[in-house]
Amino acid sequence: MKVSIKKFITPLAVALSVLAVNGFAYTGHELSGQARISMEQARTIALKAHPGKITDEELEEENGGSGLRYSFDIRHGKVTQEVGVDAKSGEVLENTPEGNNPD
Image (cartoon, rainbow, N blue to C red; front, side, top):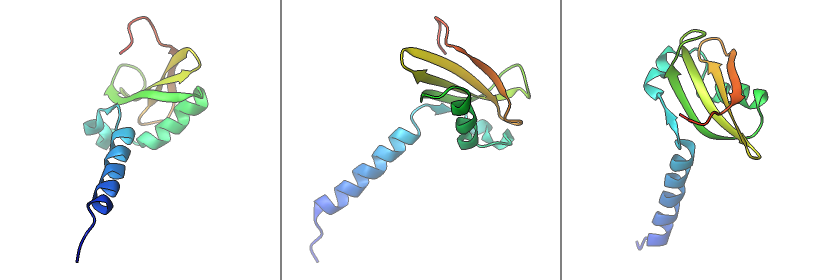
């Protein structure tokens, strides 16, 4: 049985592309066991607070709220907004334009 290399390479390339796009900037996944809401839920909350395109995301320990938050950089037009969502309550803790020294 002859297997076409193209039939093997194409699905592999698609799978790698999906992994690269979906995992583009999510750091802090080792903290996810402490979170009560998922990254997907936090994304939805953040995008309701500031619609746009997420350019960076992370789960981090930070002062305020429960001490564990999802942080998102969301770009809309020329403005990049930093939106912080408490990883235990889902509360929006921050929704401000990103400063001159982005994370």
